Image (cartoon, one colour):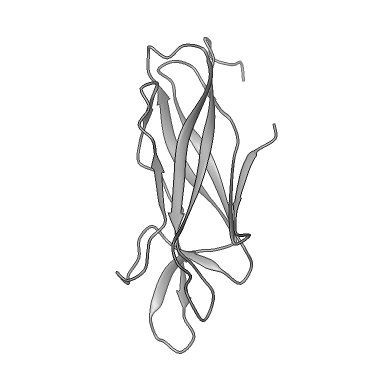
Length: 147
């Protein structure tokens, strides 16, 4: 499978694979976020309220129940010239989005609209917040696939 990929200013990119499930089955959509070397983005839990935490939002969808995203553990980063420790993500990390197809969802291919909002920084400065819009491809099958 080729992942769907969206790039934003070459600092942060997002890629996702198809999520396959059956009606009423729970699964997890995997969202891979890649941050350019020498940059980091603010984690979902920030200690400084002037910084913008990463967020994942989805458009309400009548075919799926979408639960709260699960972010990985964050790392600590100290800006040059300060003692403040920031909660950040860098390199490549994964956000998990629990997904459940409703019992009335028919077999087929679906796209769930989503967006990630983030604030990228390097060792000296933080950039303005940005948003990446993308779609999560979901395939609903009538019967569970054999393992």
